[in-house]
Amino acid sequence: MTAPEPLWEPAPTDLVLAGDEVHLWCASLELSSARLQSLHELLCADERERADRLVLPRSRAAFVGARGLLRSILGLYLDRPPQELRFCYSPQGKPALADQALCFNLSHSQGLALCAFSRARPVGIDVERLRPQVAGEQIARRFFSPREVEALQQVDPTRRTEAFFACWTRKEAYLKARGQGLSLGLHRFAVSLGEPAALLHSDQGEGECRRWRLCALRPQPGYVGALCAPAGDWQLRCFHL
Image (cartoon, rainbow, N blue to C red):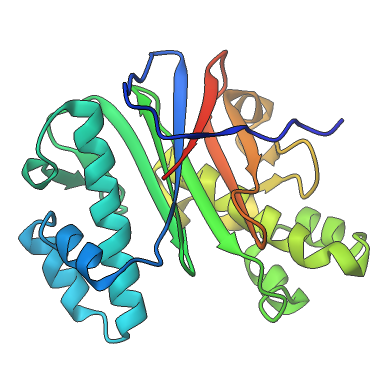
């Protein structure tokens, strides 16, 4: 069974995040110098220092654009100036708002950013541009579980790059939703490579697989992504800037 593709809507003028919704935003990071400068002004001192440490101009622009857009959208939800928002960080580095129950997560890859938002529900998001030169068996054996490597080998070679990155983004989204990062261990769980997106195995038992819901994403041609949140009856709404 193939899961339906999320419907992407224009950004609403009256933005309301209901308790039974997860919102996903897609935005281009191909921004003008003037727009980048305005987003840079929204960042806190620590974020500006992080941006300044990035040597490559494209990497620096992507960081500024993604974090600035994240702050802009958070400001819309909270009706607060974006530059006044303060983040705190988990021991694994996952950011959260210091004084709000609004949950969020951010990912960006080669000119495209995805941001996920939910009320009191942890979310994880990941997006990757399809890069055949990365999708090799050696990298799969390093980062995937044996079950995932075997499944990848059975995929038609013409579709293997997309299957590789479907696996990659689903694993990343799950790790980010749990907030544990790589400390959990990439080989301790397995996700599906095709449809539907799912957590298939965990060394923590079947209950862990039932606990989480994964959604496959294709935000733009040439990209794949994944969203992970606790299982339930929540609805996914997708917006593009």
